[in-house]
Image (cartoon, rainbow over all chains, first blue to last red; front, side, top):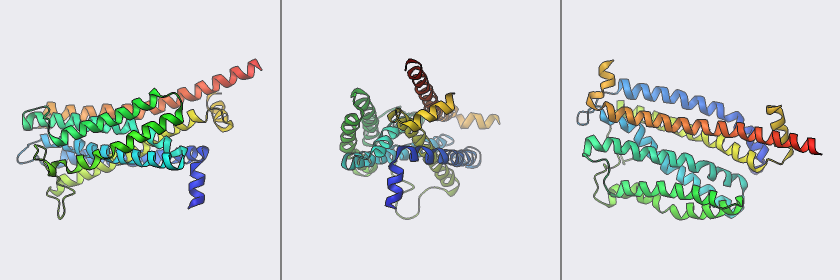
Length: 247
Length: 54
């Protein structure tokens, strides 16, 4: 196990291994996406209260889940990078931020597009929506801080501290619908006991969530590889790779 | 089929959501591909220049 971790920490090994994994992750994502979209758009019946507008949930809910999941990954990698100075953890945190920001943006935008016909408002300053908006600012702050500091390592350290402080927002987002009275509905899937959602709607929702998960894993590795190339640009193996691919 | 695109009157909201998701995910997918190609190009060019000057 330790041997594997040590090997993984070597940039070249990470670059090669991730290169082999990305196609598989991509295929898994594609297949799940097709199945999820088919079941969600063609098979699942309209909701008896919301009609067809609820189909936005197949994008909205997985995006919101991913926005939280990626933040936790980013903060955990930052913590590892801060404590053990592991370069690969820095790379993972940096590579995760733009993807997390994208999913947060999607969760907010699709939520807004659902809120307009259902609540009659694009936006309300309610606990769930506000804390999710703060999450978007945390991601953007992380990215901005990193690009503002010239030295890569001190940039990663500063942004890592920001990511760790921002972790307090995660439970706030999760429990916001229970702590405050809010317009946003409570959890339906992760509720204790049986989820209060019809199976024909739950299955496409879970498929889409898995598809997004695989999408994240594939893209974070793609971004991580670019990051590694940039950091290792002077090493012999990157030089050889560039020669090989560019002639 | 017409009914499908109509989405029970919510066509604008549903299709904007799916379209937005498509655009955002595509950008996420394409940008690291482009960045990788540009990076390798840059590294190869610099290496060539170094070899010439030495």
